[in-house]
Amino acid sequence: GAVVSQHPSRVICKSGTSVKIECRSLDFQATTMFWYRQFPKQSLMLMATSNEGSKATYEQGVEKDKFLINHASLTLSTLTVTSAHPEDSSFYICSAPLVGSTDTQYFGPGTRLTVL
Amino acid sequence: AQKVTQAQTEISVVEKEDVTLDCVYETRDTTYYLFWYKQPPSGELVFLIRRNSFDEQNEISGRYSWNFQKSTSSFNFTITASQVVDSAVYFCALRRGAGGTSYGKLTFGQGTILTVHP
Image (cartoon, rainbow over all chains, first blue to last red; front, side, top):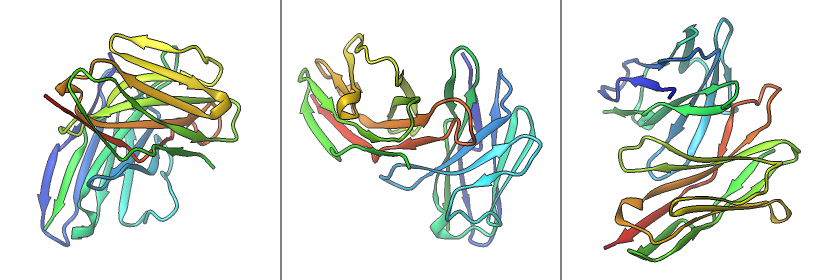
């Protein structure tokens, strides 16, 4: 079946540094990918929609200059958390919809970011 | 606007008990999809079921069953004879139908933490 991978699975960084998270669709092409954020013991909240070949669209309240999204190819989207702060510590999950007969959304395994 | 409500924050049961997780949704769309996901401690979301708005037939898969009722905007999930391995956070989610810029976006409920004790 379709698989979405994320790298890294876990990252710890110092405050003020930038962190890049990769999301890859392994056996299908994804013109659109979604980035979600999940704080501890909370639900998943959509941050942005990553569009291959065009700018990402951000949900209300998400800082586009802080969370840079690049959809470099049909199988790769990256989320860069710039100048990370402790309040950015969270679980980041990407997803990619498989359009077609199954029309199902596949989630990556998530990346746990801890900012010290 | 779309909204998903899972009123039960936490449920605790003893193994072999049946348990039902409630999900109520709000949408103005006539075409939409409903999902249930399981999130074990590892964090990875596990897809359980997808149901479209035109299919109100209930579904059973092993110990899992789902009751979709459009009249009450509910999509409840029942685990029969629960097991310790069922312990996880369960999310109900809603997605708009195909087309438009909202295609593919999921609106999640708050999640229900299920703990099954041996």
